[in-house]
Length: 367
Image (cartoon, rainbow, N blue to C red; front, side, top):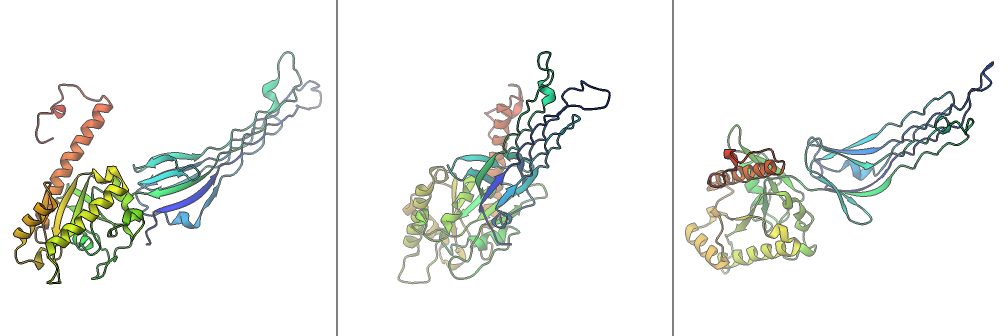
């Protein structure tokens, strides 16, 4: 299925039905009194996050969503029926923006989360509500209110624990294929990845994490060059970035380390220009295409020195899997630690803890 991560829609909620002005008229009952019923509520439009949906492609073809109006009230104290609501199912990770102002309205990041896109109008009141001791025959009634109408932009940010980034042909697709269940297109030319790919890396029966691969970045990506800038938003939800660098060179006249350092610096600069939060996200260095090197350890040390890198660094061959096991186990341990800290922080914020609870002992190194 084609990956579609942005769509613009218009939602129009139903108008509330009008109240009725009516009087009870029956034989032998000369003073029946007012009996106009209320109008029904207009239909509302909701959105619900569904983990079984992967793209926003349906909204490319169905752009207008209009709910029905509520029924008008009638005599004999008959209330108008409320109109049915409309529920739009969207992928988990969908962010809803106001199309006119650009304001972020909702962020559907949990399965089953439901929000109101447009509220239906309230039904009007019939004249039976206006009778009193001084107004025995009221002719007043109210009209139903209009439903909300909005033009919205839906944007999907995929949910993943680990994000892969690097130049085209750095080996991201090969790596995600080797370590996960993802099957992206792989070829020996740039930009074979045209949309984000998600893969689940399972390290045991009960432990796993999700990896996202986006199209390769090139210099100027933050300003629209290449394809990667369209999908950098997907990396904002990740917990750690893997920066893949190709340290091989088929040209004997080009120093592979000098080329790799220049490529790596270009990627880091694009992150800085695109988003400060993304730039400051934890980032690990992965030197790829180890199988094409005669002296991989020497290349790794020289690269880290020239790139002035002091963070986690791994040397791997995504093609034959060399070094990938050490990488995924290190990632699993790191993510377990991060998630534990996140859960503890959530519990603290909800005040569902006591100071004696051992989970909140900050001296424990495994947290």
